[in-house]
Picture (tube, rainbow, N blue to C red):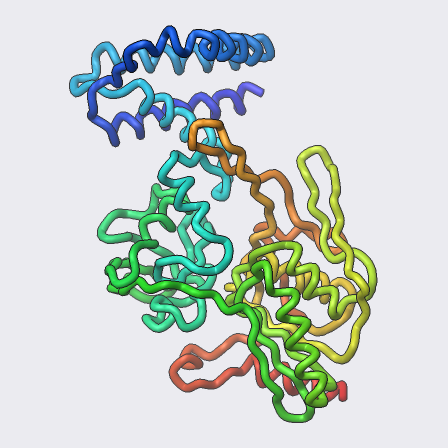
Length: 407
């Protein structure tokens, strides 16, 4: 317990120091009449604080007392002065950061507003989906046809700087907020790539529209369907594309989830349900062991299936690939997926801010944990380095070969 409290206390102090460095404004003055108007609210707040204090251990109380002492010390002697509210906001940020989870963070009002920008698939930016890997802000995947994709930024690259500002100490959503912006404006990204020197990309932002489903018929009555994202219409659109290709004589299918960063869990269950047998697709398991399982309905393999994945396949994509692999409904071809198998919940704090916390993990039908592990393909196929330039696709070619053997 002492180690956990120590880490909590260090997080608080780190947050205070960060806030101190970022602000130099004078202390905020209370509006006239605030005490009279807020008397009842203040009493209720003090009662709530008293309840929290009563639940704390001696070590936790000591850590909280340290926070208050540091707040008073900074206000009394720090040379430039600072606002108490900024200090306390920094402390909250540091406390959430102390849990050590890259997907859990405190969001101030501006960051929260950016985070809530449209889950319907339209926003201003460059078209990058980012995650955290090896403690770096990493490109899960560029969205097809977007400025970042056309510029050549690839899955597995990592962001070093954004407009000259180091990204090392940014949270994921801070980085996203800085990269997004008005259509027609520029952002300069310094990008790292394994085996190469860092490179600067000057990218003009555009309106990003995510079209999730596309497909066509290939040779030998093999249907090919590409999913770029899972939004609220993906399941319905996917079922419609399947019907279209079936009407053209499809006898085997390739589901391409490469560079698909995920999206809505419910939609991934609908997609998986088109192929896997009736039964569990994914379970969401919380801290206390509570398990919520989503099932395939109606379920059942229709024809031979290959699912393509790579390091840009994450979250909902891994749910589909994991269900197909565990149930034997198809063959997984490509390279290991990203390994983002956690569930976040946004908890509003009542003042225009919020805390985003990881509250659960995804488990496959065979109870495999995806987070930090990913899906290992049944058949490993690495794309050649010049695949983008030459237009060759060794993974797709392998998928066609596998299905021809099954027909």
